[in-house]
Image (tube, rainbow, N blue to C red):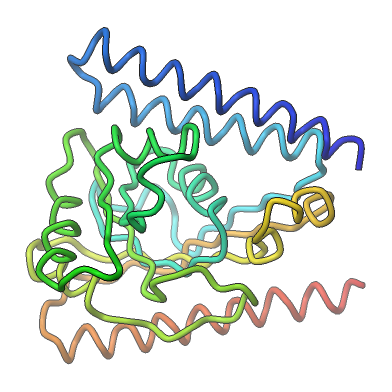
Length: 254
């Protein structure tokens, strides 16, 4: 518990400092800001994970079902979603790529480092109460973000899973990206984040938490509605199989 408290205090101080640093860099030197932010966010994410592992005993594991070197320079990443921490952990899992997210509009303001990072990092904001055309315009922006090795991220569930079980997969966001690009797909699965849904969970559930990510597969580009639906069915099935395998292994070791 004491180590967790130290981690939380350190992390709060860090995000305040990072928030100020990112804003000052933006207002004073805007040239090359996109590349600066991509590198800066990667460093922040790695440092935050390191703090959690050192002080709070976080067990963070990354597995690759395909060699990382085999991944293309650009792709669409499709993964499940359990926690805000997924953003930082995914960055660590793809250290040579710049991931761009479609976040809910409510995250645009008010959260130090996170909100400024989403705004200045050229991520998309989706208004869940807005029209489809508004959502489409926002998601399309992910395909034209400045910088190299840009990879849009889609959470097909559309929201975080509070139980860790996969929710219904929606095709709309992925179809928008596929219909407006020729990018292949990479899939990944996450587990562990659903245990830290609320701030108080960091005090009671973070210590010793096992947080896993596995990069599952690489798929060629598809574009038709039927092909996207069939591919998402397979992706969901593969994710469920991996989650089940992890949890069986965890139960057996208890």
